[in-house]
Figure 1: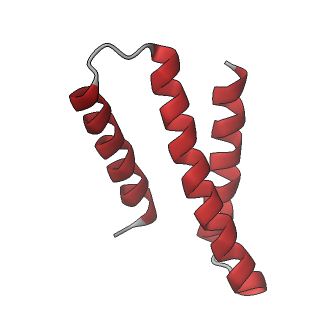
Figure 2: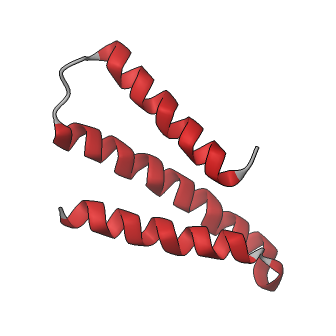
Length: 77
């Protein structure tokens, strides 16, 4: 499964799960869950980067940068 599709799928599943559990989550709680998902994905990508070293695919490095920026942006809101 393509990385972007994987992330979108995980986000979709998290949203479905939260809708099933509780329909009245605040926007803050939703944002916190999204940040947690992004942090988990970022952590996995950083582990992969550490394992592959200089052979890390540039798309992984780009996704790390993107997720890092998105997390910082969401946390500053």
